[in-house]
Image (cartoon, rainbow, N blue to C red; front, side):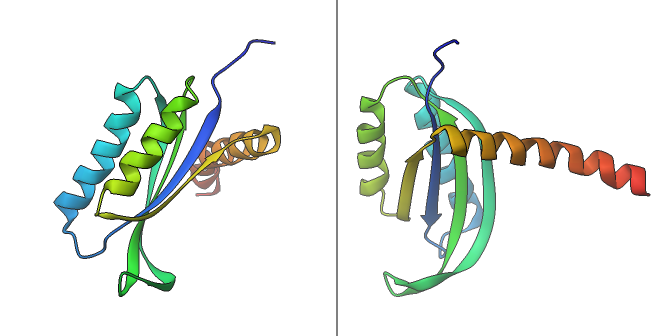
Length: 124
């Protein structure tokens, strides 16, 4: 079995007072940071503005982003975590490393999303 790069999932919440251009710029900068440091971004899903479970910095809403990426270097995660932490526009973030069960779940969800348009066309 080939030794492949570990997969990670990044969920972060962007300050909701930013306009669309600023929000897209932050998403692009985070994605570029991963790529510039040798990572491979598989997917970035913008979940949009959602209500927070509790106020953060006196704000009730946040703009949620979910990104899946792989990276060889484990030291990168500490560097990346620090970069996200010092960015004032990112209110919260969480980086998870996939284990075997999470990888199976991610692969299953990815195939379901790929098959959904085909099933919708067949039903129409």
